[in-house]
Structure formats: C-alpha cells, structure tokens
Amino acid sequence: MRKLLFSGILFLTNFSLIRAQEAQNFKSFWNKGYHLESNDGNFKMKFGGRIQQHWSFSSQDDEIKNLFGKATNGSEFRRIRFYNAGTLYNFVSYKLQLEFAGGFTTVKDAYISINKIPFLGKFTVGHFKEPFGLDQYNSSNDMSFIERAPNFDITPGRNNGFMFSNTTFNKNVTWAIGTFRDTDNFGKTSVGNKYNFTGRITALPVFNKEKNKLLHLGLAYSYRTPDESKYSLESRPEAHLLTSYINTGTINQVDNIQLTGFEAALVLDSFSLQSEYIHSRVNRENLLENYNFYGYYIEASYFITGEHKNYSKKVGYFKRVSQKSNFNPTGKGIGAVELVARYSSTDYSDKSIEGGILNDMTIGVNWHLNPATKFSFDFTSAKLVSIGSSNIFQMKFQVAF
Image 1: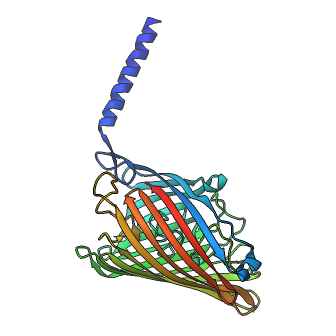
Image 2 (image 1 turned 135 degrees about the vertical axis):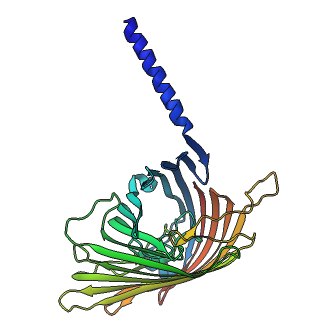
Image 3 (image 1 turned 90 degrees about the horizontal axis):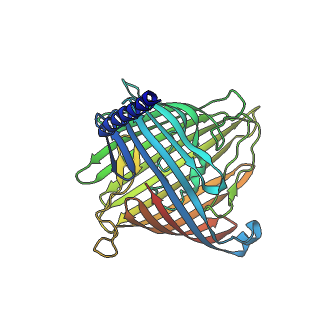
C-alpha cells in the first residue's frame, strides 16, 4: 500500500514538473483578445467573442404601414459569439465560432487550414465565408455601419467548401477560389450533387503605409446551381428588426445563378470612400424567362480624431481601427470618433418579377472607446420606390475581443 502511495506521489510530482516545464515554454498576453503562444511560434491560440446589442426606433408613412403593418420598436442581441482559433505545429490552423443570439446555437465558422503551401498558399476546408465581396469579408465588429447595405443579401455568405487562397506581388494582390455546397445554419448540406464555384481577386494599385493612402480594387464571381432549382432574394432597409421591404418571391426551374461583384475603396489618411456593385443573373431551364437583379452602395468615412481605417494586405479587407487614445472618464482620453454616410440602391424588379426597388440614405457616428468597445448611432431614410418611405434610428452597443 505504501509502495503504491509512493508511486502515486512520484507520478504526480513528475507530472507537475513536466507541466511546469511546459508552461515555461508558453506565453500568454492580451492583444484585442486573449492569446497563448509557444516560444518557438509553432503553437498559437486565441480566445475571443462579441456581444452586439441593437436598439431600433422607426416611423413609417401610411403606405408602408398598409403594406407591411406598423413597425415595432425594440431591441435585440444581434450577435452573441464565442470563438477559439489557433495554429498547430506551425502549418495547420483552425477556427471554431459559435453564435448564441436568437435563442439557439448555430455554427458560424468551423474550418481547418493548411498554410504556407508553395505557390498555392493556404488550403481551407470546412464551413466559412465564400470569397465574395468587400463588406461581406469585413467583420461585423469592424463595419462602418450598424447593418450592411441591402445588396449584401445577394452575396453567398457562409457555406461548406474547399478553398485555396494566397497573395502575390509583395501582398499587393490577393486571390481566393473555391468550391462550395449550400448549407443551413448548422453546417449541414442539402441532398444533391450540385456545387457552387466562387472566386475573388483584389489589387492595390496605390499603397503608401507611411501616408495612410491606398486604392483597393476587387472583382468576385460565383457560379451557383441550386439543388432544388429554386432561387429567391429579400432585403430589409438596413434594420434587422424590420421586415423585408423587397422580395423576389420563389423563382422556380432555375438552372444556374451567376453572381458578379465589383468593389473599390480609397483611403486618404482619416478620410475614406468605399463602394460595391453586385449583380445576380438568374438563368432558367427550358428557355424560360431569365432575370437580372442588382444592388450597389457608396459610403464615406471620416475620423475627426485623426485615426484611419486599417487595411490588411494579407486578406484584402479592413480590420479593427487603432485608436490614438482609449476612453478614460477620469483622464484626457476620448477614444476615436468616426462620421459616416452611405447611399444604397437595390433592385429586385425585372420583367415579370416585381420585387421592388429600395433606396436607403444613412448617416451615423461611431465611437470607438477602446480596441474592444464601440458604440454606434445610425439614422436611415429608407424609400421603397413608388410605394412609400420609413425613417429609422438605431443604436449598437458592442464589446468584441
């Protein structure tokens, strides 16, 4: 018995020493999230999440009320997410992100990547965003507005797939191409043997890091074959608590859909412009009537406190703003203050489809208190062409790390 007890103590002592030695080979720190890294850089882990609460207040004219009913003012947790991402043995990376808003758990990201492949760059498999569009790739944590423009609903979003991606010309060009299957919010594909093909390429004709100047251009294309030969589009007026104002209804006997996206962004220190045009061509079977739907936006941003948008050459989109100061109610720090304005137009009407045309004008203020906290205030005037209009005031309170 004593021998067994001694052996157990010896085992626990050796185990503790091994764990202590292993602990010395790792470092932990905070950088917009909690990080754990090995000293040799072969193992990296990051833990993070986001809480986004929205408040919405709307007024409508009589025509909109008669068509959709009276809008309900209210609030919601738009996003509640937790994630873990990391690198294993230097060449393999992963990410798992779960969404808890809405009363049930869904999968946002769940993928594995092999990195640093000669010529090909990175290979990714799992459930993740298809490479299409600029504002879709920008994280909801870092968007200039509380909601994306309505033409975002034309983009493919997240699906199961395989993708290769890389950079070239000193990271002034990025490219990504992959094949995908449509999935539900739990990463489950539908029954069938049809696949979608999506690709994106971006370029930086102008990039001056010292002067905070850049010109970004991008092109995306997606060829899609729905399993049930059906297709539909619908969009809200940049307010998630409102109903959809434009809707194509279900289009049957669809052979394929071709999506094309053009994107551009200009940054001149504290001032920036960004725009996207997205087109959807619906090709139907048996010489039936084909349809074309499209949407675009143009937005402007200006930091009155002197900051600028942060661009990632590695992936070809914008990331978190770096404040010159953090908000400090007992000191001099106020954080970063950003003024924004956007005009968007989305047209879901073509030939026999009378889905509607929605034009939105939004102005807003973003207060970046610190790298993890942002408060946003937007006012939107939404016009449903030939029908009526709504005015919407929204607030977003966010912690993201």
